[in-house]
Image (spheres, rainbow, N blue to C red):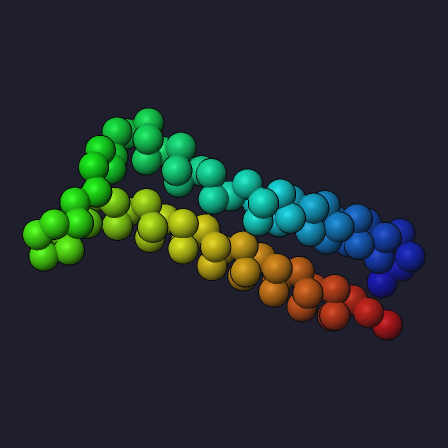
Length: 85
């Protein structure tokens, strides 16, 4: 691999790392915005039988985005490790 190729790959990894940092910081707002634009959950019912209604979708979305952020972070660390001389 030439130095130019190595430099280009490092630049792309750095860009992906910055995008992942922004995704980790603001990614949780995406499911919340989608939820309130779709008008759910309109209410959280905790009585009777601890029913949550439709709000489980919001929590599931938040966890899925969190897991995606973790996966991106791990992918970046593996990519950096494989390029280290």
